[in-house]
Length: 404
Image (tube, rainbow, N blue to C red):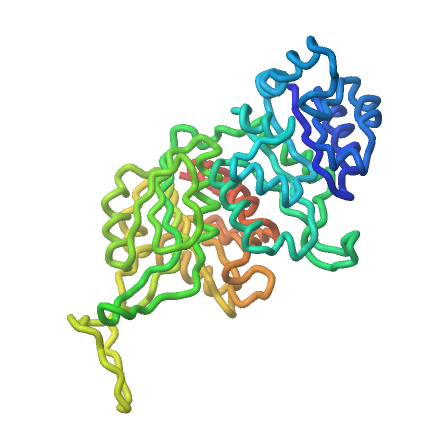
């Protein structure tokens, strides 16, 4: 397979040489495209010697009329001839250009003409990585279906300690391998996923909710879609981009989520209840806003529908996966939920962790299965955790069918 490797301008550009060599060792042909800034950190000759291919350094690299005419459409040829586009390092500037469709050099024009899978390996200063503009640009690029290899933490060239360091070449190469050779092991499956919080109104203005961001459920939806499944995502109110290629059902309250899940249950072969559903709702909702007074206010709350337990009673031969978000007694609570809700698997995580808690892009979970097996998944991006959950879910279903 031919791969286009875009090299952005940053101190990590030298690592792109190791990435190129590693890809070639795995049988890929690598076409390197360098930005002008990248050439300040590493010379094109290095990549030419490694890959045996012409290194493209600009839109108009030769002054002759014939070469200029050829160069003016060369980015189209590169986009057509290569099956995957990897950009490593992807600087903050490059991410911004890609997100907004700006095309002022060979790499960005190639990106706009490219229709295959795209893998991005960001590298930048910690403050730039955490800036709201960069986060928004990454969300846009992820929503397009691009795979982002999260940068590592550590001491950066600028002296800052934190996230922003280019991921290790081996990790980037592994991401390319997964993207270039996608699995379709969920083809023919319909995966019904719930995500995010619910909001239970107290009056026309106020509501009860929780801190769920929906990121884990959305990562599961994206992972299932990329593996060939039809995905129905029932989502409470969140502030993250919708995954592409997924059927969205937007709800607010637990009752609305319950109805949406029951209505679509007949279409599903796998059900994953990752939503953080509010446990209580107001018994009688006032028609007008409740005015603040000096008096103490008490609320009469009733339990919300237990969606997971209801689906457990109706599940038939579907695979049912629940989530247990806990602050203590993780395994005992997960095992209790596994039994009382009739689940096949419970994904348990501690939500009071400073690393993997609410709003984090990382997670660490323990899979508790009806076969008695438990599997610990250590800290990783939620997209990787989602993929691992499906790996173990398919093995679990096979084991359950064998024992029946």
